[in-house]
Image (cartoon, rainbow, N blue to C red; front, top):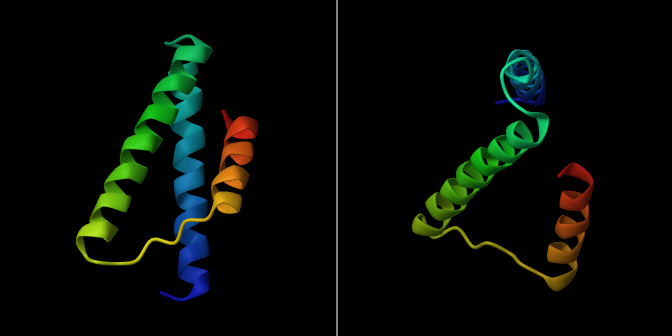
Length: 77
């Protein structure tokens, strides 16, 4: 897939995210909605990581990379 196709898929997913988050906001407390959203993202991320590990793809990890990911998570969560 070239970068234009990836950009279109990314934009479509972001649009769907916005549609569903706005629909959910009328039916659930903001904090609970955020927790559920992050929990689903965690499960999908763990599933993808497990898939990569089972295929034998090396997963690079550094302390600096983990620290930056934690800081990024603080600003998202």
